[in-house]
Image (cartoon, helix red, strand yellow):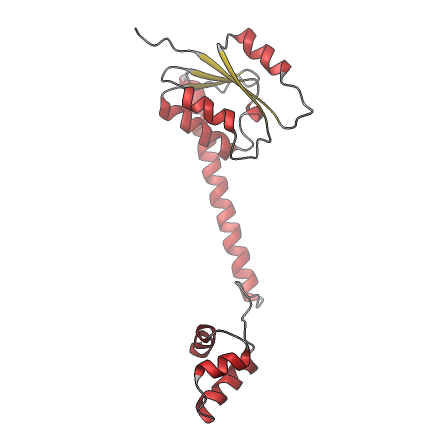
Length: 188
């Protein structure tokens, strides 16, 4: 027997106090045979019902949402989910945003444009971050964890080891650090 593709709905609200009924009705009226519902923040990575939807999804099926913000919290998140749906061989449709229909060439083009915009946005963020780091370094800002030992403590350790012939382990114990920490400080 040949598999018949289905319209599969996904409904989500952020809090327990919100109601899924309006989304449920809209998806049912649209013809969704199955609706996966959950009450969880869209920012959460572990959305159990969304994962179950992916497990249930077959090639030719179409995932239907009432609005894109019910499915994804950002453009990057949307593109990630759309790519996962595409790999299965299924499509994606939004009732409130008719331009999101990956079963049509126009809808695929729109998502491709979104992907390009998201890549451009990531590149701009990377450039701004690099410029900000360079400016901060020029102002003398140091990145990373603060050194455990002050320059005076390192100097004192050098004196203990070189002049007083004390073992590194003893100098480290006196300074309250591990031997490896002292070795790293001395090598700088």
